[in-house]
Picture 1 (cartoon, rainbow, N blue to C red):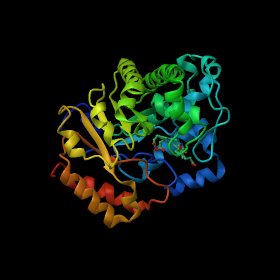
Picture 2 (cartoon, rainbow, N blue to C red):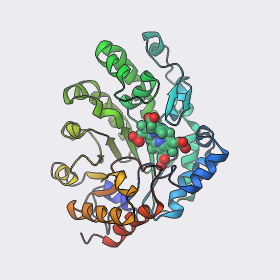
Picture 3 (cartoon, protein in one colour):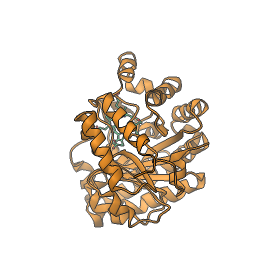
Picture 4 (cartoon, rainbow, N blue to C red):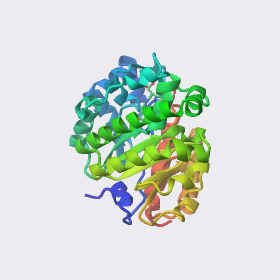
Length: 340
Ligand code: 1CP
């Protein structure tokens, strides 16, 4: 077995840098769009055979070093009795706003939390090349709360932020419950075959350093510590949060995933040699075509030391991305070996 991603997350040197792409299984792939003409996103996520096939789609095209299970960050909230629609992002018909909404939420057992995702992981694991790592994931408590309180993705998430300051105990209670949900969910994913897990605390950047450290960080720490029980490496992703990098560095993780606003090489200098750093091409560079992508990828490899670097984008790949740009990125990473 030669899982470059796992070696890097364990702090071991590798013959070349591992590469995977956030949202690698989505709408930029013609075969995904074609399946989506027959099935809605919710249907796709709820059918393990189809979800496993979608998980494998990018791997059939590109020699990536990880598969990430096809699901959504909202998949576990069905176990709380909450209905989620997609248009195309998550939409909650009855957002959680009052003490009663939150106090009435159940504390579901592990088997009731997104069993379809757990089954999908088992199916993918059985099919995946042994050199490719399987990633599970969950949102972080703040990012899940963002959709549950706001009702949908909205610039600045004003309702969420007003709850953070106007009813802090309520939001704290909600996030505590979400941490229990996500911890059980991530441990179950590891037991079902996920080799490592990524926590997407995407909307962290909405908060100041002080507020994030007070409101979000303790919950994130509890979640990451609880997941240690599963014994798999943990990657933490934050978006639009260069001001929070220093606040995250003492969290118990094996890899930090940051967007293109952050200088990877300088973060690398501030973390232990055995901790990995993941990222961080601007996804928009891929829209400019294969030559621009190749040049940007070469620049990234030149600038960031190989040891501990997991090549990825700084955020999800965009639906309008040309396939040739992904090919160019793969080419550059494979050709480079550890020669940079
Ligand atoms: O076909 C479609 O129209 C559905 C589009 C889509 C897809 C492909 C959504 C709706 N979710 C997903 C899958 C998904 N989402 C994965 C699976 C892995 C993969 O595709 O390779 C993952 C890891 C996510 C993560 C996700 N969803 C995050 C965290 C990471 C990030 O991008 O910051 C967030 C915030 C979401 C919410 C969401 N779900 C879907 C969309 C379009 C969005 C974002 C926009 C919004 O908030 O409105």
